Every structure is written in structure tokens, then in C-alpha cells.
Image 1: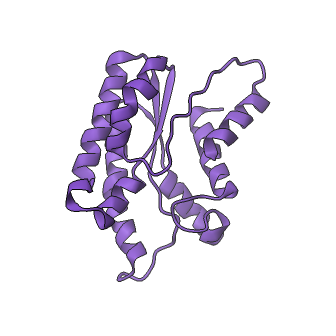
Image 2: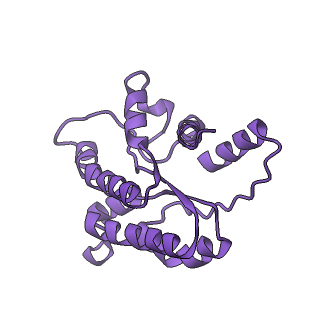
Image 3: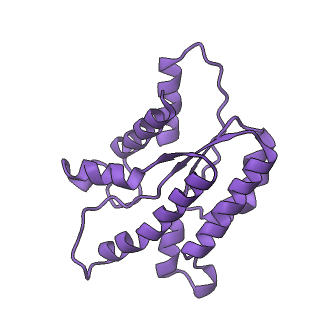
Length: 182
């Protein structure tokens, strides 16, 4: 996905840089799962940079999981804050945060997609809060995709709203690299 594209582009652009990458992302994970894995998957490496993109699965659980497994915005905020606090306390890493996204255009107000887009605003707001509090770089992915959707249909980037194809992953990698100034 986007991590592989970003690594390959960094390697192509900066062959002289000796960078070690640790991609610990797990498809389908949620913020509370990430928090549980954080010490072993992230902190043990004492990284210089930490990049986080999480949230759409948290949001989707609010619609489909049993009440005990739901992760509403407040629980998302709590987990997100906890792993970033650990990062600040135990490393000197700089942080880059990416908004969760949903790759559809505005839809009928009674449609599920519209419901997701409305709920997504609260999760994106959490990422904005965390970026401000932890002085992190911020990649507004949902807004970037919405701009792309002004020019091309959603299936250009994604066969369904949350799992990008290669073109969709390139959008993420490009946005990430631009934010990093690379």
C-alpha cells in the first residue's frame, strides 16, 4: 500500500539516506488494538518519526459491533491520546498524523454513506486535536480525497470507500511525502 510506495519513492529520491522502516500497520485494526501493541510494535524501536493513520475501523464499529466493542469518538480520543503520550514520554520521535477517510462524494442524506461522512467529522476532529497537542505534522487525507473527487469518480481511487487501490495508495503516499517536505 501507501507505505511501500512512500518507501520506494524515498529510496528513489534519496539513495544516500540510510533509513530503516518499521511498518507495523495491521489492516482492520482499531485505536484500542493499536494502543495494546504500541510498546512492542513502536516504542521498542525508539523511532525518529512515528506515522499514524487509524480511525475508520473505529467509526465502522459504532455501526456494526456489539455495544461493548464499539469505539465512539471519546474512546478513540482516549486511546489515541494514550499512545501519543507514551510516544512523547518514551521517545524523541516526531509525529505525523493522517486523517481517516471515506472515499465517496456527498450522498443522499438517508444513505449509509452520508451517515458515515457525518460521523467521520468527529473522528477527524480528534486527529486535529492530537496534531495540535503533540505538535505533529498533519495530513488531511479525507479533505485531499474530497478534492480529488471533484475531478474523478471514487472508483479511480477505491473500489469501495475505505480500501484504496494502487492509485488511492499513491494519493496517500504523495500527501505524506509532501507533508514531510520530501
